[in-house]
Amino acid sequence: MSAAAPPGLPAKMHALVRAFLAEPGAVHAAVAQFGAPAHLVFPQVFAENLERLRVELAARVAGFRICYAHKVNQSRAFVEVAQAAGVGIDVASAAELDSALGSGFAPGRIEVTGPKGEGLLARLVGSGVTINVDNVWELERIAALAGPGVRVPVLVRVSGFAGTPVSRFGVPVARLEAVVKVLVAERERIEFRGFAFHLDSGEPAERVRAVESCLMLTEQAYAAGLTPSVLDIGGGFRQVFTADAAAFDAYVHALRESLLGRGEPMTWGGNTFGFHLEDGAVHGTPVFHKYANIVDARTMLADLLDTGLEAHGGRTIARIAAENLLDIWLEPGKALVDHAGITVARVEFVKETADGSTLVNLDLSRDTVTPADQEVMVDPILVPAGMNPGADDGAVGVFLAGRLCLERDLITNHKVWLPRCPAPGDLIVFPNTGAYHMDLSAARASMHSVPPKLAVVQRSGTFTVCRDVDYRHEGA
Image (cartoon, rainbow, N blue to C red):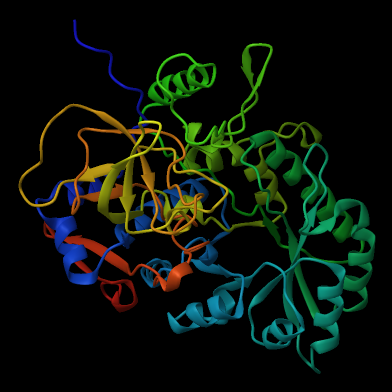
């Protein structure tokens, strides 16, 4: 009788990415030319993701704007694709604004979100970009900075919806009276476009409640003599990481059993991943719960727009927007780069620890491949060096360790099973790292340099790789 297969977390991958990884020598050639570790982005996958969202919107509403949330990834290639596709861009800093302008975005296609100080506001006023206002101070400063004859287009971000956790961003719904007062008083300087929200949650019910609140506020704005024309539903549309929901559930079950002392140990240093043990049972929700999602952004968006609202006679959100001549704006980031990026690292050495665990040391740090408070919860891919796949001793459970002289620099605090034990010179590929993983941390401790970012394109069946900064969209 054959032994049971070890628990695994197979990653969902785009066919283009899978084909590149399967191309003999392609990954090794890329790092041989540009260095390892490296981040690889796939602009053609980004373009497909964008088109999927555009199709859902076009089928439901007459007016809409997609603004790519630049902060999700600093890739020039992604910005170039967004610009060529004619959509907007959401920037959250002066540097991101420069990036958008440098890639050809006209000011009218740029939206600025996030916290803004005096210096950034002074630059934005009169530039033609839309400012997504976070608080009353910003709104008042915009009015004060606007010169004669200047009208500044703004959205007002709101928060504090019923049943939604408190957010540090936006104006609480209960305090919108002060905002409306400024908008009415300063209508000669401020062009109020509408209300916006962005939730740090993918829960559909929370998003629906936010839409209902914004529609109510829109009616109040009409009553005050304002003419909002936009309903901005933000971003936060989920990614799909796992290729097999059942396998994911089986891994979580094995992890819970392991925490109870049953079966093979599966975590490093007593890490419980958010679970807690009480009365001989495992309780709680794991910190990596986002990896369990199997509903893609396209479906989330369609379901939201097709939701009927009881307060509006059961009419759908899309229909209500159309009847009130409201354009739907959104700022997807993760949804557009889903499956459009991977990170490649080289195996430096393999060692055994005092407790018998196998550590595979890589030439990158944890903060290079994932935000420090998260964990990559899909299986990495082993790409052997050369043509020799190495000894096939069967699946082996390992922990992936980083290059920093810090105990905490464990890239995986959970055990991962690879088809064989890696050897120096092999490559390890982390799937789907395009959303924040590449740029949010990127530690430079010990004077390590930031990994190069490369753009991978397939044309006529042939893959080409270039530095991301050198990428130019075809036809541009």
